[in-house]
Image 1 (cartoon, rainbow, N blue to C red):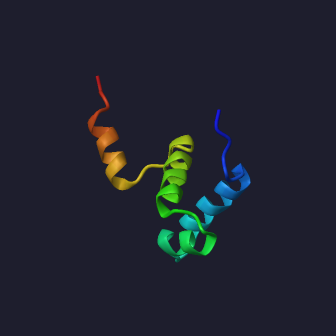
Image 2: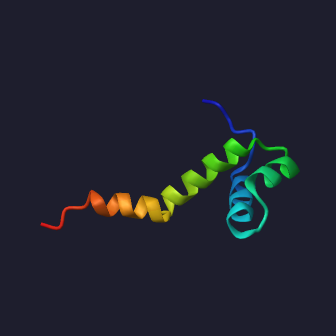
Length: 68
């Protein structure tokens, strides 16, 4: 099993920074020396774990929900 280069605390802090600041993920990645794709992946995992959806994801989810 591969161990992560980053602690869970670091990942969580980075995700919170990305979601709650005006800075772009590109800027945050450059400042923290983390690939922006990695940060986007952490955000995706965070949102999935916490059932947070964007407008597009909510619409797609509603379209697949049966009302019967």
